[in-house]
Image (cartoon, rainbow, N blue to C red; front, side, top):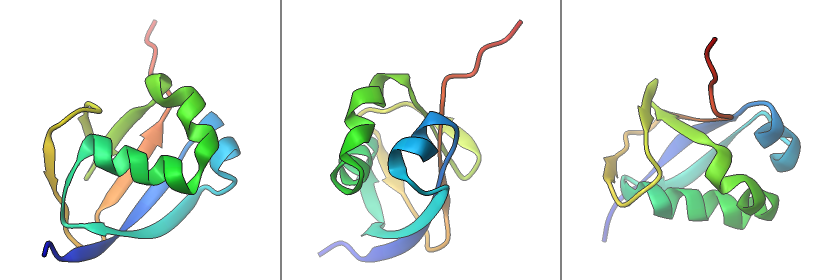
Length: 88
């Protein structure tokens, strides 16, 4: 059995509107794939499914792609859900 840990999820812009919160603490397995983590967030906030292709993840302030990569989370890690960043 994989141990769980508490992580802080930060929502920005449209993501915060859909989730109805700017942040929340959730319990997830310490070893989890990015897609599994996203599915957990969609379960909590079904409206996020509509924008799943328009979000960027940052874990411990490093961007990660939504895919099958395995995350090694620690208690208190921050997960930021942000809209795409455009430059000029």
